[in-house]
Image (cartoon, rainbow over all chains, first blue to last red; front, side):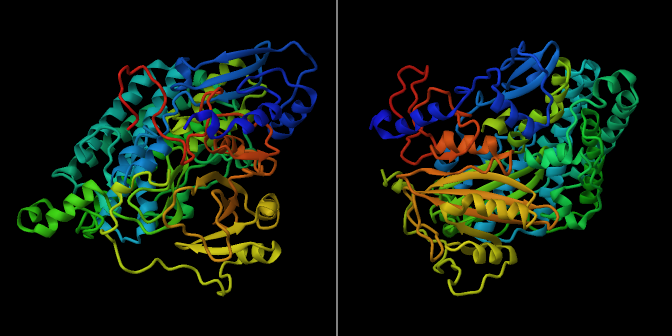
Length: 435
Length: 196
């Protein structure tokens, strides 16, 4: 079957007829398009026609991967920006349809590579809801602890890159140092620094190792000390404040309209955190605060992520104290593999093990949408099953994908150098944007 | 190509004998928002999907339902718009009263003041893959609808910038359609025998 006869050709013509910009190109706006742009972003257009269009990326070091931004400039003032994405598109949603639910975790964990455990968690929650499987309490608490550790490592990565983008290069080294410690603990628990595939439908892959309490508490102390250090280094630093305060302002209304979630929405004074609002796992059993600020600028987003690390430490410490005993995965032979020892003595167990890892388990027909508060905002998993061992549709709502659009509302009027600060404050992970 | 990978789906390994429970068609709509939508827009069907409220909306009402949810029911954010291609489904799960078409457009709405969600699903036939755009109501859907357009070839009428977003501009075909075979792009791996 040739591609041309298959589909798309009539639509393609229609597409070309409909767009007034041409595919993925930025041209000076005509009057009608300017009107539309103003309604959406609230920007101010100068009364001149002499603007310049400049491309930033996709290989610019401050674009966090392969993001390309086209900006229309008036002198050094940015009038608007259009993110062009897709350079990292690897068809992960299509791949997800080719993998069984057992294999699916290895796929979704690679989307948001800075917080892989959130991806695994949201996928596992969606599959478990379709399967109607109950997860043991210990597995829930292990998951919660891991996700919070991952939130710490993700926000530490942000502190590092944000500092680097704004010229505070020593901050990059400090942020990386604490992040590496966090990843080392995650490696000790899950076996891998990143892309863990540790949270799986039915529970987690393995029980916590010996000495995990000691190591985790030690890490909490180290990271806490590190965060105090960053606070001292940056928060009252006049150069830092000069670069960030009042830059990239966004209002609650704009953030809501543009689909922004997570620290971006919370920086506008809107205290919305799914962990509090719609608790999943055992978040209603731990004590923590939702960090939010009022100004909606780059500085506020930096502050939110800084103090969220401290809240995560608080949760991790409570997890260490309250970690219940019991199973780390549901003992449902159709979903989770039997213990290794059982395989030696039971033919049934061997068959279950073999079936599970060759053809996977079947999920009853249905559809569901699971959500989790990832470090970047609401990550959602829309999962459709037709009763086979592979999903019909696996869609991940990547928070970065939506957050990137709020740049539209942040850049008008900013200086070109501020655009770098704004992109950095969005903390986009391109693996999740492009999937 | 309906026989995509039947070898991986052995029929004799069943999880359970029980049929998944389906919503009764005559049951009154338990969800207040869904009840309001069903009462207001004829042809709308309510379904309870694992505890989540879902309304199956007719294509003609797609934009009106979103506008109603936003303006009258305080659904402040539309979290996500995506689509599903049901070309090769072996067991299609559609509530009674809904005629299953090849494509489904799915929108997830979230109300912050009421702290609740609702999902709207619209059946879109393969012959006329077009549905109203919701970008004028929720500007944040601009990327999401471009993604659906790009990967499924569904046209959103009224979208301000209907261009490809993830695939290259000159790409032919829509990768997430079930009849678009994976891994057929000639890449630099010379001698790669065939798509897997």
